[in-house]
Image 1: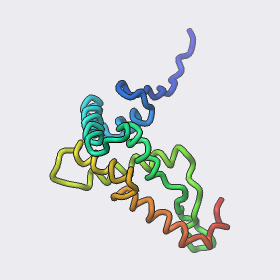
Image 2 (image 1 turned 180 degrees about the vertical axis):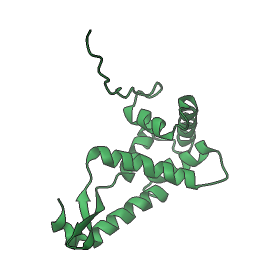
Image 3 (image 1 turned 90 degrees about the horizontal axis):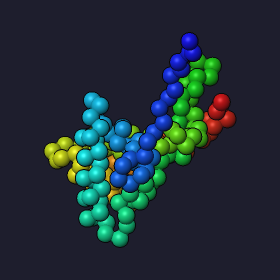
Length: 156
């Protein structure tokens, strides 16, 4: 008998916009395995984005919003001789995307009192305009990296 090997499933683009990034975002948005609910929230949010920003395609607003939240550098703790230093390091492309998605969703989930698709649309428009909670988190991370630039020689 041949051995059966488990291969990692590849990500399938989302059905409406044929975008891998949108599919990844929906998967992160999804709760308790309810993908249809995640898709409904995401697509309703993009419909609201279309109403708020008339001159751009909603999927391009979404892509640009995620791009505006992606961090270039981050700080990581490095222990050297009994002291822990915050060392600034470059962030690879996959981690940039993961952090951007995570930060947008955290910003949306922190807001209370309105339907999820409305909060998501508002945060995406804010990120598109380089404003909002997720972008301010990115700016804080960049500020921390800049402040600890003196320890960059500890990077591994």
